[in-house]
Length: 229
Image (cartoon, rainbow, N blue to C red; front, side):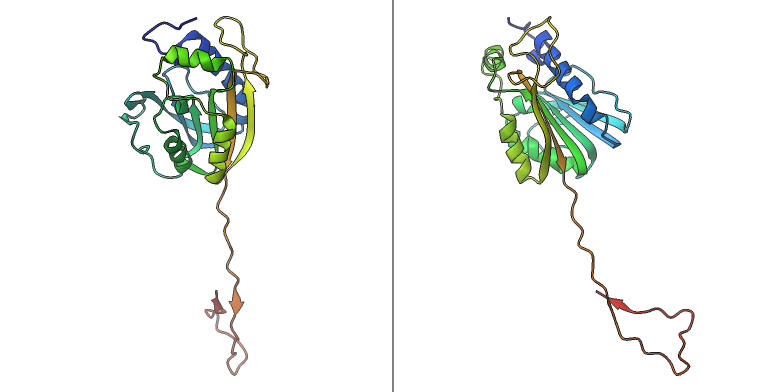
């Protein structure tokens, strides 16, 4: 089963169905995401991001080598054109499979994610029947598949805490039959959810200085006790 040429496998029927199953499996976690801005970076210009009741706005990009298209146009080999901590939710939808440097993509996703924010990664599991199908479809154009456990280790080194990781979808690519959205041990897709840890603030320990009262034993209304760190 080969997807039509020119459309790309990420807008083809099989992977569109897998992405829909991944989105459905993620929906309970995503509906709890709150904030002003979310960022969705996809491998193809296909499904729209979900409407989330607690998230105000989505920014959407997709890879159209050698550039990103969508809400901004930029080169894929350059840092994302956003300030640090810009997004409360970042979703990398199959994009790690098509960029040249997946570690750099992960680093940029972590950089633009706000403290306490949620990072979501979805993709094809490399230990599944989907993997040979993927490499056959891409014929060398794909950059590779990554295990979610490897991605979880990378995120841990970047200070993120993985809160969910599961496989979903059918065991092999198929176009018409509905795909299971519940966790499935041999599912062809995976979903990974991680949270960026908030910086710990160490409070100052205040020390009072000896207070010398005037002769009348009272302070003026404007006087303040002196505190030092």
